[in-house]
Length: 499
Image (cartoon, rainbow, N blue to C red; front, side):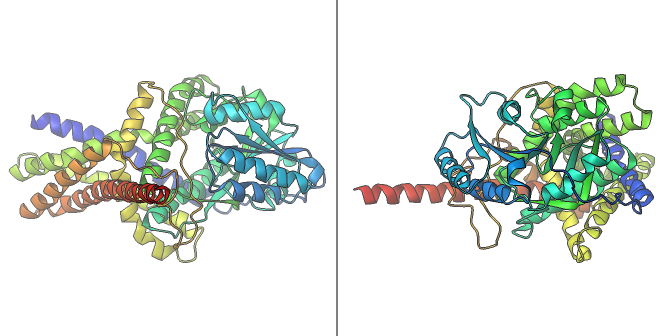
């Protein structure tokens, strides 16, 4: 039995080490290309027709902000078309009708596009909108974004610098990054992706992806790559790979940003992470065979494999967390000293991850040293999300289909803003929370046992797992109950007034 546990744990750590060490690869390319600057683009001298697509579904709290910011983009009015691709089923529909009507009265070329069904979800809405679009270029913004006025003036010139550029992606900024510990750790995770991964992959010549929003496409590129598909939950990643396999180039702009609102409550964040994780695995199943059959250089094939499959780590994080405790008892009993000496090498993966996120903070923030204190919390959160995301990985691997569940947004920007009274707040939590609670108790037992047996090296990892599962499960239950209680009080108040 001990041999089975040790072998399983070793395999899990080996996979985590492989993906964790990829941080060293990113840091290597960061230093190799950090002096490479984007070629200075000339001011935009010709103004092609541009369509801005705003796909929404039940976004009553943020849609006005989105539409008004889109209409404020600096660009000739006769060359700018705005489509509000509205699949809503609630009062958002009437709200959008009123906003669009007012914007039309102000002279904006804006359309409220409705469909009879939500077939294909976001991908279906984008595809239907594309058939009506008059633009040569298609910019896309989700409901939680606030497009900057200069977005088109700063992105369009790159399409004229190279006719093979099919998409330009901007870096996400965070409207509410300082709202809470939850949003601050999300900001760190996203900064790692945009500041390091996207920027360095692009400079090194690897494939990057459109992030679903905050970017602009050449319409011909979308059509040439086969248009939007709805067979995965990450239609953006899917189309990105199909386009680049067709020879189109992508451009990432680290210094051009698009502000967005981060999920301010954990059950919404879980929904978002589940969709992103499962969709990436679905896209890997779909696109990796094409990647390896292509004539791409070997290093791009390898890097693309890491890119598409990095979410596979979550089940192995879960396995490692569960096996940490029996492993501690095996170590204490003795007889496997050489095994545990060899296992100590795997700690270097954490160093790679730390350097990866350190440089992402250093590149963007003047107070980056202070922000590094979030790294242990970020690591604990990654462990705490292992149950939620492992479920997503397993469903993706076994091709179990599910609906596109959008992440609710509440127009939260300042610390004084509250999401509790909002309509879309989840009042239930998934059964996975019960597993997280059980694992938090289990890992607490591991912490106590490590202290008892003086297994000092095991304590930090046991603590991280305990903090992760404890923090995630506690917030999941607490925030759902808070929202349920508030909605119940509101219903009782309404009933009392009616009487």
